[in-house]
Length: 463
Image (cartoon, rainbow, N blue to C red; front, side):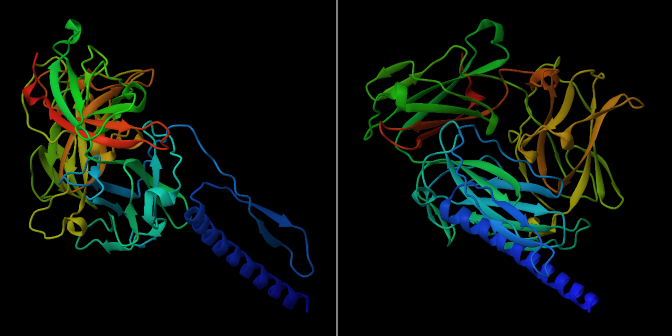
């Protein structure tokens, strides 16, 4: 009798635990959708109650966080690869789009399990602090929905599932402009990764000119961005307080310049002509390689080998700091998935282990990374190079999907500061892409609109 009661008690306990897990997942999803706030919940475990050894009774406390810190993008673990995030371009790059344009998110999960993933969209201020808008004010429809478009890889050595999301879709549509963050969650409500994007409206024109640095010490190594904002049917109220700008070099938010105020205001024109504040290091052209055919050598690939996956060995790179500038066309750090003799690169492109090597003296308190849009310009263990004392070079192997990639080597000094030009060099002649975003919050407004967008290239740089 005692054994029978014990078995029944275990069954009931297991049933309650299962219900507890399902309820927690459902409640988490529902509250995030309905209230649009972060929350925590606390579960109390009660003492014995009749024949049950443990009775779990959930008590939920909702705590709203207004959060005033700048949000940072969450980078994925090794299971998530090839996050392609774009709007109106072929290459994967920071999406900057209008409300009428489409946003595309695509990523691979190196697993055949077909796990469920969910997306959430949040609105942010100019400085990437959380905006005061409720979800219903910036979103038409729903988010926190499962990504339903996915396929398994076909005829590849590396098994993976490819997930695709398009915004707007039948359930989700954006209503206002500004800064946005899209978060992807797994089945356990754990955030997998997040990415930033911007939506703008054409109310102001932005003209950009690229100049060599006005500081004679950096005239050969820096590029200065001058720009003018003007409007015709739209007026700025007190622009020194209500207008903010962000300047991007090669779509890299991590090196963006922000906080500049107009130096001169002439009617409807706001003029920005700073001496040093709007200057970027010129850098050097990105290196590149292509692996569209894994069975043979391509651009930048010295030889290939087949083990469990194909291995692509790149040519040995060397320090370019003391060399003169040489024009070498690139795609400004971006990447594009390409494959030879296949129809659908999303599921038919295979993964290869790419071997990078750099001839450089060993550094004691500094680190070298392989840098580019392929991993959102992140600096972590997955792209940190290791010095090989036997060969005398820095080396790293990175698993990448077939395609065309830009990359360069950067250094992080002993203070943790990024120094892009120490290995690659800095030259004013380097071709770089620049974008300027204009934010406006009218007096009494509750969020920052993006009312203007301009783009320029340093190919026609002036003095």
